[in-house]
Image (cartoon, rainbow, N blue to C red):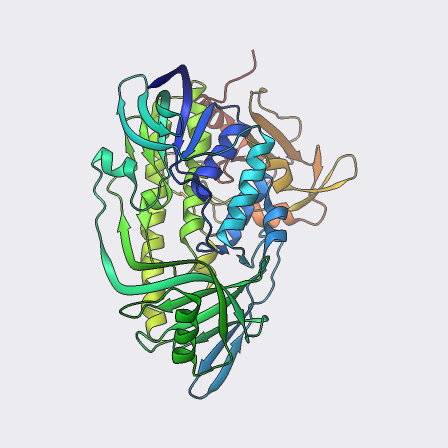
Amino acid sequence: MSRRDDQLDVLIVGAGASGLTLAIDLARRGVSFRLIEKSAKPFPGSRGKGIQPRTMEVFEDLGIIDRIVASGGEYPTMRQYTENGVVEKRGERKWTPSEPYQMALLVPQFLTERRMRERLAEFGYAPEFSCELVGFEQDADGVTARINTPEGEQTVRAKYLIGTDGGSSFVRKSLGIGFPGKSLDVRAIVADLRVDGLEWDAWSRWGDGTRGREFSLCPLYGTDMYQCLAAAPADPDLTAEGFTALARERTGRDDIVVREVSWASVFEMQARLADTYRVGRVFIAGDAAHVHPPTGGQGLNTSVQDVYNLGWKLAAVLDGAPDSLLDTYEEERREVAQGMLGLSTKLLDAAKQGRMERGREVMQLDIGYPGMTLAVHGGDREKGVRAGDRAPDAPVTGAGGLATRLFLLYQGPHWTLLGYETGTARPAARRNLHVHVVGDDIRDTDGHVRDAYGLEPGEWALIRPDGYVAAVVSTGELGKVEAFLDNVGVRPVR
């Protein structure tokens, strides 16, 4: 057995989308970590292929949105084959100044994670594959973990351990965290196939509303494959011949021929939520904390946003902020997961009846944390953003004359204090706080900041590192903001 005596800040267990997101966020914050994965190689499947608009905003902040977009495309036309003929539905591309992404992306999960690994490599890090966590103990100062590696067992010391190791999470089970919920009585197949005889311009679906007959083939842009989603027969044959036979049986067409199976899985749909997300210095996130049916494309997105919430808080506490800041992770994210499970289950029930419609609720743009610990009450507001809301985007012009956006000013690991026509009033400079004032260093040329934020002259909005509003106050109430920043580790420059 070997031992690494240098204590890490964080040990991340599981190198899927949530583990990679956390690793990128910690890397840009200068937090030391290791990212381990028990599998010998990256996940090969397309499973979590839907990227919702709020997650696209997260990916923009992490510096990978353009690579993600280039790896896939917008959702194709939905082509439903019914007894009464073919019905087609096409989503509409939308854009507003406050919500720059309103169209979900379709990107195979293995390509999303590849782009994440490339971004992580730019910070000098990579996942460690074939490294399995086999045990851990924690004390008041950190966590001691045992890891099986190709070179033998290692003992690693870290201040925090984060389990992003999936629905069967070793970390969750080791902590004894309950995982209540239920089986949804749906057994399904998901597979990546190379197929002849099928159009590439649409997501073709058969059998919706006919229990046990559901079958669909969705083109995976960025590849030459289709993702197959189907109700699983009693004894599924996952060979190319088996899928060809299943396609013929479910679609009534003999021109659809499966040439190759790249990846396939049979699973029982579950809806489960962990009783707690934290035990001492150990946390769980992503599928380790919640599992769900795939309807609505919520899972990967909720998982990414879990760790996007946790990352800045870990960095702040490691830098001296109170440990209680970490309790807000569960406070904020467990409620979101509970709502996501309800939405996914509701959409599954609708799909069983052949009438599933995805509306704005799947975009995750309206998720927020009002009334929670990190929402500073600054008086009642009748318009605009409130503490706990998602911070909107808006085009602005810098005082130097160049066009930019609020999201570009927010991008990075810092907090932002946005003032609106505040005159000469400015708070004292603080490390990790950027201050911008409309009417000073930026111009609200077309009134989009005014419209999105509802700020009056002399008001300020404090924006968290993860893009949520922490406070909206007047200049006379800036003391509330300064006290709040003290408590989250954003200290004045001496």
